[in-house]
Length: 372
Image (tube, rainbow, N blue to C red; front, top):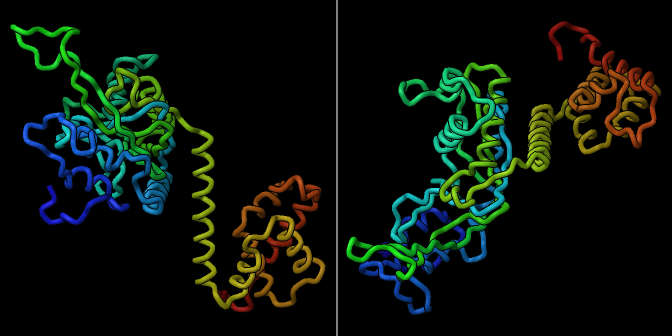
């Protein structure tokens, strides 16, 4: 029931997890599966308040959360990757709920997620029973910890797996045929089936999985990541994996595309912040002019202002050189290479010459030591 929110007749884009867990008002005494006024069982009617063809989760919040996880993972020299569900995925089925089967909701994002502790347990179980070649028990305890020593958490940290985009949910059903039997009335195929609805995540949902190292070598972290890939692919995560639920596949192309987009966005933010700090300076002026320009145009600016019509003012030359140094091009030119091979036909020696012009401007000293 809704003692304080009687007027809240629908979710309206809020936190779906809070709605689903706290606002259930379809309870009937005894939880009989009698049809409601709409002709549906009351449990199914409530499940469909979040599984009605739409999605849950706010795009901006999910994008921000995923970006922070990505930044944290790379700052700690960890590994993160997107895994996409190949089948329906169920998380938190054993949690208590008025509709009998629970669901694991992220407390702030309001979307389904996999707790890091569950992921760690899944990986350990996979390695102990299925992984080939078998891993040494001591090595496994070192990486993943051991239950016999509660303070030994292991040297790999598993973060919660969260979606990066809004999630589509679906109503599913399990139908026990042998419920309610007694010694006098044994189970059998002649008994009346009892449909039990539950909530599931639709296939083709991408979740971000992240692992962080704690004082281990990169090869060991890579090995744990391979264990994670195998466990998600072959064993599955969440509930009902024995009947095919929760199978994931490592989506490498999407991971690369998504990571590159995040890197570009962060670079753009950093450039904007740098321009704001350098506003009114020569470097700030040139940063504004270089923004969004292709590599060919940046080469032309170097040729015109540092070679053909050399800027007279040393501060102005340094400003241009520093702006060029913030781009990814200068490091390539120093090696005689270019990012845009299709449109730039300069020879390797020519590119190196342009790089030397920029480096010379960068090295120019101020008239007075300490001045910028």
